[in-house]
Image (cartoon, rainbow, N blue to C red; front, top):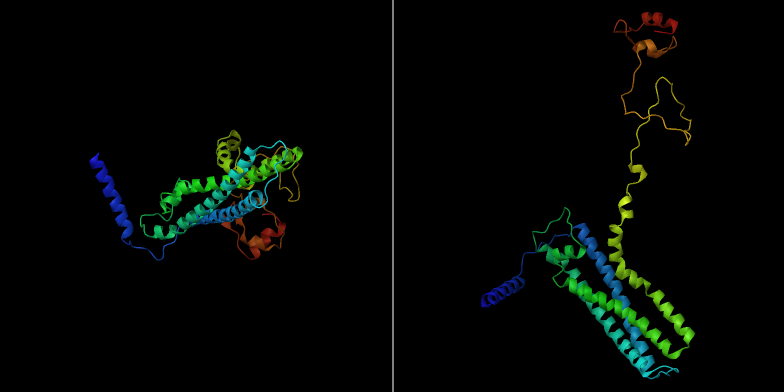
Length: 306
């Protein structure tokens, strides 16, 4: 027991000493492009959450002052003091949760801003290749800190329940003050307005279910232009086809053949007019010689066939 305690203390002292002693920092280090995009995405989301939580905290404070401060609630008939107490609890909880969410956002943004500095001090980090890790694990490798995951969960909890407490505070105030029809309508509206939060929380679950669904396995991400169609070669005996001719969709396609080198006809299959300039370049198959230029060629080509 004492040995284990001494080992843990020595390890803690080593880590503390490493944090105190300055290490070599690369001044020209740049994060990989994918890691940098992940970091910027988290910063944008957390900054938006900071603004929303701050507005919710201000709104919760105003509602608390209006409901329980100078303007006391006139309790509707049929309402009990327990509902008023619940309204007070929800009002105070909303303020605390939204303020706590803002503080968590500050810590997260601070840790994200230190990633390039910590990564520049670790020469063993890879700058390329691929890894099979999640975003939080990638950020942890590049120096976001060991408490990152816990602070993220704390921020999500405070942000979600702080927003819901605002809706609950409004609905409970309406439940104490207004008629029954308005209560039901506002409760239904609260459920509709809470759908984005449910979608935000359940999005990872639905993504996993969709990934393993049989419909996803049967779909192909390749477009029709990526699939190379077989080359259609018409029969030589049937003669050339017109370029303007169109194939009917109901007709069976022409038989497909592999791509072959072009077939060059022999000189005995060619016919030219007597004065064509190409007759000087013909090859005589019978004598296996090139036809000469001059009067001999003109004499042979006078009939129009070689």
